[in-house]
Amino acid sequence: MRPLLLLLFVVTFFCSPTQAQSPAAPSAWIRINQLGYLPSSPKAAVYGAKQDQKITSFTLHDAQTHKRVLKSKKVKGFGAYTAFTTTYRLDFTDFNKPGTYYLSANGVKSPVFTIGSQVYDHTADFVLRYMRQQRCGFNPFLKDSCHTKDGFMVFHPTPGKDSTFVDATGGWHDASDYLQYVTTSANATFQLLFAYQQNPGAFKDEHQANGLAGANGIPDILDEAKWGLDWLLKMYPQADLMFNQIADDRDHAGYRLPNQDKVDYGKGPGAGRPVYVVSDKPQGSFKYKNRSTGVASTAGKFASAFGLGAQVLAQHFPAYAQQLQTKAQQAYAFGLARPGVSQTAPGKAPYFYEEDNWVDDMELAAVQLHRLTGQDEFLRKAAEFGRQEPITPWMGKDTARHYQWYPFINVGHYYLGASQDATIKAEFLQNLRQGLEAVQERGKDNAFLMGVPFIWCSNNLITGLATQAMLYRQLTGDQRFAQMEASLRDWLFGANPWGTSMVIGLPDQGVYPKEPHSSLTVLHQYKLDGGLVDGPVYGSIFRNLKGIQLVKEDEFAPFQSGLVVYHDDFGDYSTNEPTMDGTASLSYLLSALQLEGKAAPKAAKKK
Image 1 (cartoon, one colour):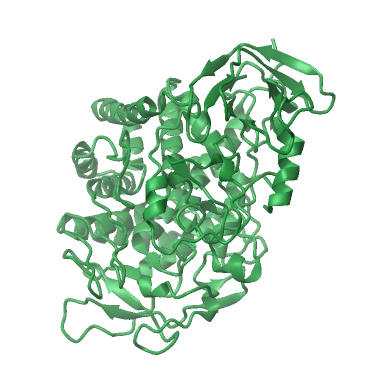
Image 2 (tube, helix red, strand yellow):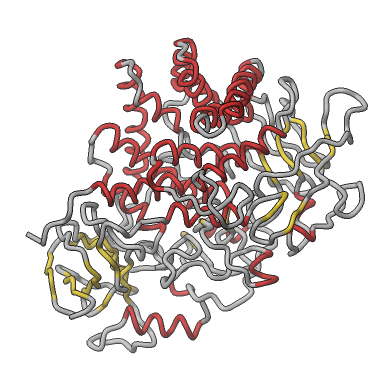
């Protein structure tokens, strides 16, 4: 959004003729969920001001007639937060009549928003657009193929095997660069399968298996999940041979389209990329090395994706599902024999995914094998692994290294919390609850109820926590985290200090990232529909990253603070780069919200 357009937006939506300050320089704002609110869900907005203000009430108005439909004193002050001197939380949960509205407080008006059962309809399908745009091999967005010569093995334990060609084309590019990791791709594949398993009625069939338009009798989300599974099978070609990633940070060679990628990895420009054999020892092609100690983190992710895929795809591809089950059992055994983490490998820079946990991956793998086979030994092992990490370690903390605790949600705990074994069920419901309590406690003193640390990919953590809160609520009926769950959801779509959605294109007429860090956008102004951007980071992180330079005037400058920053700018790869795994993780949350809207009883008029 250009500065002039920003000014027009601010004047139209945030200012009121009764404000004392100039409309060109507003000093207070009301942040709302731009997608809207389900009638039966908690509803809140956040008022933020640059100076001390006292608010004791607010009003809700019909956007068509401007008639006041609610006056409420459900206002809670929280003091200073981020760039605001004063913040208040405005709660209008009790109002549930469908329609379009705006809020007003102290002469400040919010953007117009909707209350209705349809506000999340088809949003889960919408984010699949970004997944298709990220496809490697044949890319339906570009209608062309890329990286067809991948790749050649590196770090093979057998002398003479390195540089041997292996077919590894396919899958998704990890983010706006073209690296590919099993770590993120297996998790993304699992998330897509999980979303369909839990909410099959939320997804349409409008695309073929290759991603081009046209129905094929299979929901699009399963087409996308199978695209991921097909690549994972290539990355695990033998029971005792497993690959962990394709390419390394030599990829960071400037803006270019994937089908024009000419980076030379020693075989000639564009003549194939290295395919890293998984390692239980520190690994790296040059000076820098990771801190790998085993392979269970990668093997467990393979096994859980294959295991869930075998269950979900059996109806459509029975022989393929049987192959997946065999691979799931092989990968699980491979990880069981080699406990520890297999981190991604750095190239010429010191950055890599610093995953330090692996028992969560093996827990989830064992759960899926129990569901496939019915063998109690897998359930026992799943619980045993889960007890070693009852709470995902980032929860309740104020910082963590990059992808140190990944995935950001332990879905294995959810499955065990739904177990038929009463003892296991109670134990793992408690684990889910304690993780939520830790983050809730950390966020209780700010108006956004934000307890998630602003580390790199904070939006992925927010999505994971919102998912955990929703799953816990659905399992137990316990509403103690409902307000936090809603605040996390609302943050992603505009109820944050910057007033922007964090998903490209949602909602279409709202404020969302227009200039994400991506070659497709920078070179050709392509719109990356559906991508979830990394999200805000601590100011201390931003100031210490290499190679970041904003390329335009910061439209969000009034909302930046020493605590946390977010920029809608090509140059900021730390906050405005969409990620494939973060986007995939939204598929469950959005599909569940869509079905909640459909399942809720028709809202009555306000009492």
